[in-house]
Figure 1: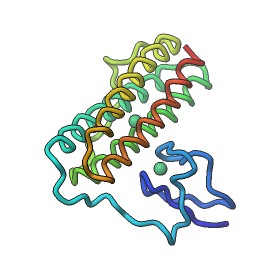
Figure 2 (figure 1 turned 90 degrees about the vertical axis):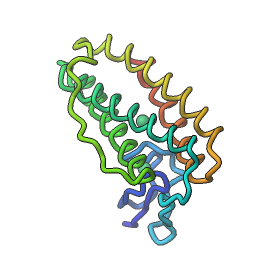
Figure 3 (figure 1 turned 180 degrees about the vertical axis):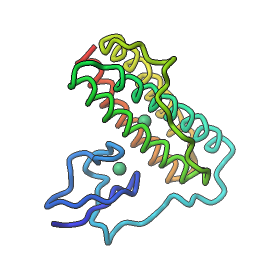
Length: 173
Ligand SMILES: [Fe+2]
Ligand SMILES: [Fe+2]
């Protein structure tokens, strides 16, 4: 067994090989590195006003989406939808943690959002699709606007992960 770390969320993973996607933040395999090569890049000096604004907006988006998915998981009757929404909720919650590290703010508490989710899994997959599309559009713009390498890297990786989520919700709705 070897120890790997994700260059996006920083979380450690034990396995014989790097996973095809980070089990925590969903970043693809190319971001997984042997733990001894990992460098923490989240201390970004002099964040530009635009990057700070975009990171704050991203944090709000991730917290809202995680809260939506936790509720969708609680509401789902069938085990497959329940598990899928739980996995998505955890991924979005991990994204919120990562953004908090760069912003140097405490992570807000995330509770299932009873008002946002629609109870029926099919309707929730439809709503999830819209949420992920919004996230992708915003993150790709934020990546283009970022002048800091790390902020650009994080927004690019998030764009990629949320694009995979669109495909997942597309298949279920
Ligand atoms: Fe990760
Ligand atoms: Fe996310």
